[in-house]
Each structure stands twice: as C-alpha cells, then as structure tokens.
Length: 370
Ligand SMILES: [Zn+2]
Image 1 (cartoon, rainbow, N blue to C red):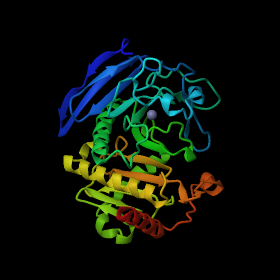
Image 2: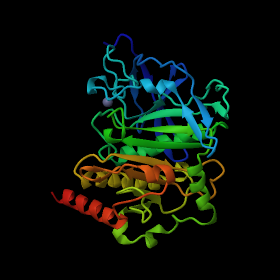
Image 3: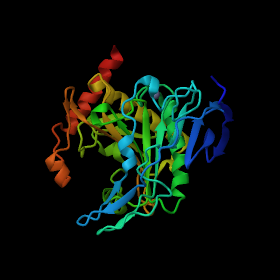
C-alpha cells in the first residue's frame, strides 16, 4: 500500500570532517524529522502518526530551592508498551499502521517527541502565587535503528559513531538558539525504570535554564579538570576498556552499582571537538561498556545513560563525558533511590566500585570465551 507515499532523498553534508547524509523532513505542526546515514539514500515517506494536541507546558519555581519544575498534561497520554506490530518507532511499511518514523526503512532518526514536555513556542504560563515561566525548550526522540530488537550493545560501533555525528549536528542547531542554555542527550533503558517503548532509542531535552546539579558539575571543572590524565591515575582494576581516544571505567566515586564513565583523553567541551578517530574510539568504548553491562547478569541492564557536554559559558573548561547509571545491583535486585538519596542527594552504595568493575570484566571474559 504505497499510494500515500512520496520519495525523499538525503543530502550529503561534508562539514568539518563530518561525512554524513541527512534527509530533513518537515512533518507539520512544528514537528521535524532528520534521518541520518553514512551513504546517500532515499526513503518512501508516508503520512505517519498525527501530532498530539494538548495543554501547553509551563514551569513553576520551587519557593525554597529555586528549582524549576515542568508541568505538561500531554505526557499523561503517551503510548505505553505497545506490541511490536504497533511500535511508533518502527519504520512504516503499511498505510494502515501509522508510526512516528513514517519511512520504509532508516538507519538513525532524530525527531520531535510527540509528547514533548517542552516546546519552542510554549504559551504564557498561568499566573500563580509563585514564579512561573513558559515551558520553552525542545524534546526529541532519537531512534538508534529500524530493528525493534536491537540495543546500544548490539547496533555496532559504526552506528554509535553515526549517533555521535548526528547528535553533534543536532546540538549545534539547538545551542545556536539563544533560548537554549544546555542540551542533555540521554537514554532510559529497561521497563524496570519505567521505559514506555522497547524500541532502542534515546531522547534529548534542550533546556532554557541550567539545572543546579549541572551548574555544580560545570563549575567543578573551572579550577581543575579531574578527568585530565585519568588513564595514569585510575587503577587498572577499575578500567573496562581503553584506546587512543579515551577510557571506559567504573569511577572510584560511583553513586550507582556498575556506574560506568567514558571519557576522552584530551579535553573537549562537546561532541564537536572530537576528531574523526576520536569519534570512532569513543563509539568503540561505549559499545564495550554497554556489552559489559548486559553481560554481567546475562540480561539487558536497565540504566540511564547521559551525554554530558558543556552548558553555554563553560566551553573553555568543561570536559565532556558519557555516564551509564545502571539500576540493578544483583541479578534479582534493583537499586532504588529511597529516602536518604531522595531527600538529601547523599547516596548509599551497596557495591564498591572495585567489585563492580571486577564483575563487569569477569562476566565479559566468560562471555567472550564461550
Ligand atoms: Zn519498534
């Protein structure tokens, strides 16, 4: 059933050592979609899922801590764990089964979240007895693959490198917007932590303000860079993988069981500063880290994963890094953030980082030898 489709071709971009093809599609109502590939290709484009209307998002400020809190009614109605045949992130091969990536096949897609908590043209906030502001910002979905059953640990280092290039291009656009202060690309992985779609995907939030925790992290780099020269300072037992580009390791300061960081050896504030070979090297380290996390309990590890790049104004000192925060501490035990962590931000960790690294490395060795 191809009667409602059109053909869209990708356009090559050869910018600053980036060798990438992009098809940019305007899906109407402020929704965009970018399809990324290494080689030029074309797509059969269908109509796809319609936009979701709803109440405009807004933010309210906590009177004691100054934190901004987002309120968005539209998110209550988002799709919950659909069957594979109804997955909105799968390609669209049938005019009857609408998806949110409505092309016949694709490699990597970044597109506007149908259930955005923030919007570039958010309406005025309600007048309340506390500071409010419009929910200005951008929420994107990043689908890693057409393959519903893939994951970060199985898509391959080449696809992760394409992801790095795609995020670099998207972040450049978002950070050029004066309303945006910081962008967090991330992945929530696993039903255990509330993921509503099984399809392998990440997201990004482009924020109009700098959350306090991120400001503290960014300010931590101003006097000294604790991520400089790590390869000679981190004990070998905490290392998970290393190459010319960077290091994957369990940090001695881990707050989560099996927490894993991937850090480029040479300081760069964001993805744009990574050379071609550093992108390949970082992709290989992320792949190995994801594989070790899945190997440790011989099951997909539920985690949150974040790309930490410089907020505006901190580009001269910030050292970009990627962090996995796994949520399992044993094959049958979840790590929950309970009273002490929630009220204080003071973390209680049952698994010493040294034991976590030993388990990750041993599980992977076993798996590789089979
Ligand atoms: Zn899917």
